Length: 420
Image (tube, rainbow, N blue to C red):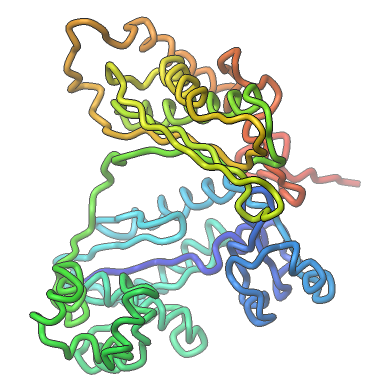
């Protein structure tokens, strides 16, 4: 059996955790630079606030209905997610952290477990130790566990937040209930094609011949069909190093000068290098891109990227910053107002399996230097030690006017309790 544990309205729940007076009130969380709604409480959904809603268009609705609005606080969300996943890892033989608020658990050869009771125990333990509410779905496959979780979340009063698909009768009833666009892995584009063919529910999908599914949706679609039929094709996956790493940001204002963009791109390259070192990887290719503001039709538009094949594999922040800066100089054009930039490192290789170049290699002194920088930043705080070409005072320079405190990761931002 598989279980999918999903944190309910995770970002909103994290914000409510330290503000219990927000329970019952609508809560929304905004994207970088306070642009769009990326998380909503059930009360906010009931008000008709859509996912991705531009915040400036809904300010009047927010104020009229007493909506609590927060900037994204990823330090808080990441820490609480880590705590939730740590608890779940103690309650199953295998775990796959699927996203910041979801995890698959696998229970092979666990014949004596009452899954309804075990799901309730998991929910209770996570809630007791972190304050985060969850929903749990059990089923023989990962796709069906996703479906069971959806039912648990949709009908909390009837399921208690836990639903188990353990009979063929339950499986067929669930498939008939689920719209095709809500099937895990289908999405909008494929759902339109399926509805055009008369496939409106998950049940309709599994009734299609395997050859037809494979022809129209490749072997991935066929595996999904098998999963929905109760045949396991997707195991719990181990954590593997990422194939590419990106650091991209929209700016709090539009930049026009090369020096301003240069500082941002250098900082993004340094961040990518740090992420590479965390997974013991080096990159052999780097991409740099810049964009103007596509929403400003009154301004001239320009976007460009450059891919640079490195002469040697590296995870040194110094070396990657130099390559990124050279790439930026080649694609920068004066006379434009830039709103976004980014650095993507690709063609990754393990730092333990590097093939040396006859003529040029990464400076071996950087390895110990970067290790020391990582240790200092871990002890003293993010980016306390940085390159001279980076801004000494700020990091991402995002607009976060409604940022909550980082209660669990910053000692200076914990609650103060006064007695007397």
